[in-house]
Image (cartoon, rainbow, N blue to C red; front, top):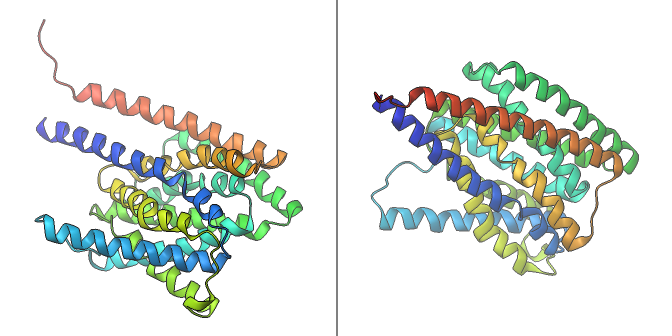
Length: 303
């Protein structure tokens, strides 16, 4: 019984941490756009600032706490860090090659990828409801990708799909490892930083008309958001972690519409509505199932 109560407490902790990360992440793309920078300049600067923030956070933990856990836990940590570096590059390029709505709608396929990978890699077989949601989301993503063929942003949509696949693989590996990966995405930022610097020809080639927005993004928003999202799999399942990316799916297009008047296309909006509806329905079902399980663990007192 004590173990069950501890598991329930850890689950609530994981939900809170991951929710904070997902909410903060919703302002990532608007801040990137507000910097008005060239694509590779933004990739290099955002990555470098995030890596700097990671060093400061790590030094603070070492100095003011007794935490001596390894920053990158073993070979699994190195693998996760490398995958985060690849995902960061593909995500940033997708930002500049498709609309924000298309990008976040396709990234929302993350939970379904995570469910499949959890089944294949760690034996967490998805429920039939997950397969139904996945089928609906495939239709939604198909509409968005086909719309990209007409709008000329097919490359951006494919980059978004690749990023979603990478993130779900990261979540699944982290879930299997059951260890803290909070610093992995932060130290992985050195990868896009170095690639971006090579592409622009060094620091002198960086073009950022409004760098302040990117400083806010790289030093605060991304470190906090990804530390929370990378810590979540230690306490909750991969699909549950991936669900919190739904916050970005819903809110990022809203911020872009309010700030830049960037509205999704009709076909992209239809596909996005299908994806969000499937995700919301699936999330409500998971929440209901979790509450039933929690009630079954609760101690019963005689009347």
